[in-house]
Length: 157
Image (cartoon, rainbow, N blue to C red; front, top):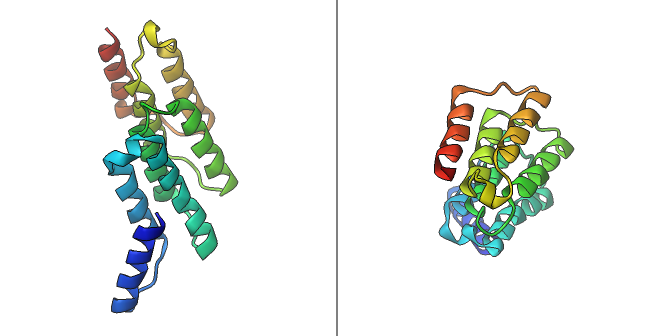
């Protein structure tokens, strides 16, 4: 994260721009979509962007956390996506950023990557908890939410 940020800072200086929330969100998106994020180290780099934002005094927004949730989804094979998703949601509350339907749909998709079968030890219980937390947080599930849930069930069959 540090090297990429340094490169971005140099480019910004050349064109007279400053690093803002959108710039950091772009970096977070790059990490979220990079294949290296599928490893725990890659996820740590994504989480490290939050620290860089704190040091720079840059505010985080819903896009920041949705990109972080996307990084958790990319790393679903090496970390417990439900546990990491809860961590991201807790960080959002700490920063006073309200999760939205994209936040929860991405978490649901991450959990679904592990499958909803009984073999995983989770079954539909994990998906149901995500949807219940959505409702608890006053976020209205959408058709996409239930499609993601059904897609996970289909993979488990």
